[in-house]
Amino acid sequence: MAFTLRTDSELEAALDTLATSEGVSRQEVVRRAILERADILARRRDIDTVLDQELPRYADALRRLGE
Image (cartoon, rainbow, N blue to C red):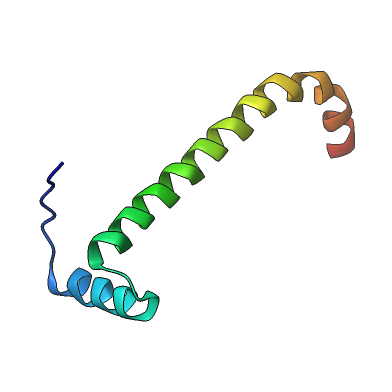
């Protein structure tokens, strides 16, 4: 699938620096960045789900600790 990414000079320089230092293409730098960000968001959602389920169980103890 083709995708067009509009860049500015700052992004171009950053892409070039990362691609050179990692020994990969600029496309691979962008691919890795997107996948890493998606993974971070998925883990954050998972943590939020667990907290939403478990915090009510400990709400009273947490309140007392905060006093």
